[in-house]
Amino acid sequence: MSNEKEIGLGSLELLQKAITPPKQCPHCGVADIQWESGRLVQVQNYTEGKPLAAGIVPLVPVVCPHCGIFLFFSAVKLGLVDAETGAVK
Image (cartoon, rainbow, N blue to C red):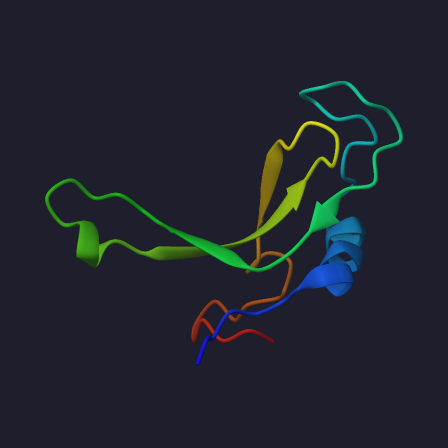
């Protein structure tokens, strides 16, 4: 059983309330872009010699549908993930 969480449109709405995504892609320059989003992802902070002791950072990815560049936003700062428990809200 997977514990992946689909965030979809709701996260884009939260993202747009929290910040203003660029209307033009910073990589390919396409204007009036409609950013796409999918699942919450996580990255692990790297600590040399102690990779398993490093923290996990939950992120909301958005992708340019034209060139595929990803922008990542903090799921904690957006209020999607509880900072103390790591639970998806």
